[in-house]
Length: 124
Image 1 (cartoon, rainbow, N blue to C red):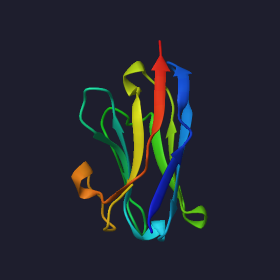
Image 2: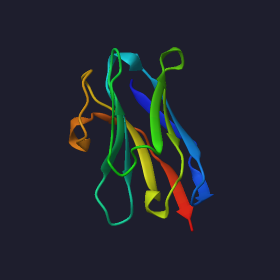
Image 3: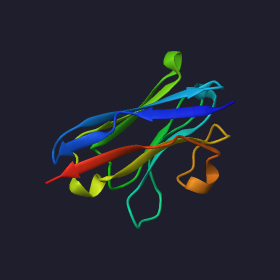
Image 4: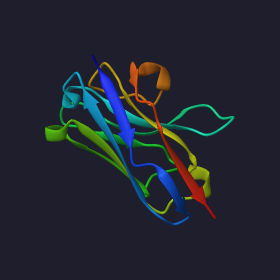
């Protein structure tokens, strides 16, 4: 049974940093694409970053490039999102998700398993 469990969210002032973690179980995470998504109240869920299976190519939304870094620890079956220089507009519920293929997509509909989410709140 595939499970994804996020942690690491919290409240931080603008300019601060947080690191999100997503522990995967029930499958080997390095085989598949994994992604981070976020959803703010009243807005659609959007892709933040993705990490491909195998050799692991990465992709980022334009809004987070240069500030966020996605990484994966295969030994721990864990996906990370290091978020630096946080902005108020980064406030959202953050979700990790697995795609059932090794190559990635930035479309939420292409992912088949989701975690429960972790809240990130950035204040000015």
